[in-house]
Image (tube, rainbow, N blue to C red; front, side, top):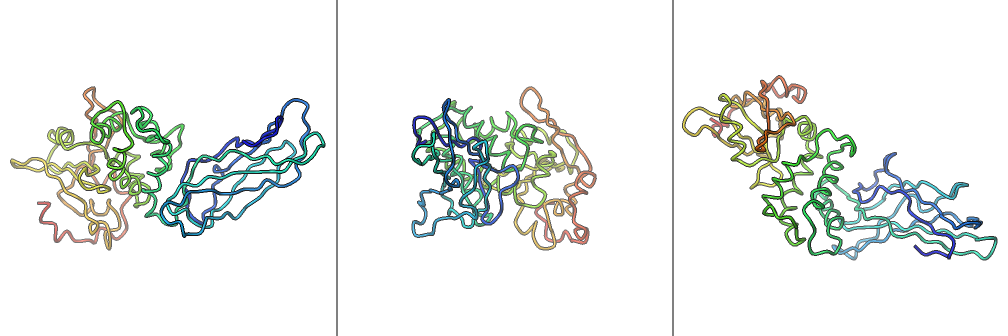
Length: 351
């Protein structure tokens, strides 16, 4: 920070890096705390309020107006600190932005000087939900690589976990269900070849897939709750899914994220006959209109009768432990009141 030899304005606490929505106030847990730190026997008297400025690099469209805040200045308390919250009045167009703070003070009753903080960590302000996946990827890239060509996989995994928990609105200290070590191994194997290091140039291919899964969990009705409770297993390949389903009776099914269709739920289900396991890709038309949600769709399809719920436990070989339940028993809280009136006509491909 810009200082004299005896005082500095510092960002003591901040909710960044993070994503925000335009015109949505910061929550009670989302605040910036700034403090003036001084040397021994230094007297500091604020001569102005703390000013807030926003700086960002608009790489997508330089002609767009800069975002603004509804609070542009605030006062320090007698302890020379303050908490700042604001509402972003416009978006950053999926670009990174930073906050910077400054204040004029008198030191030891001498002339007035200006103290400036460092830049805050970056953030993005979205104007609609469709920007969420791309914006999260921009933040994640900066957090992990920060101008480096490659980093270790454990660093990538740790940041993925952190962002995943935030995106699914979970407590970072006591999450309900984050990414397990097996989920992370799956992602590393599929997208990075189980490499101990990850290059930034390979990230975009990964994010083209993972960046469409996250918004589905965050915004699509019931999906996040179904993930947390283990009704959506999620990150599993067809081979392991088949190993889980084969011992189960006809009609048993498991929900996973499709590897070939980013952001789409696939249903693996047990059938009689030589094929034994079939896979169904949930279409947009299956969960719109009279079918209000994924649970409503599952409710009216007779081929899906027994749902396999993830227990949170794995066998030593990495195969997940799932328990079978009648689908109505565990999906009932997610059913819409009108979904039982939906016909199953038109679903011959599920036979």
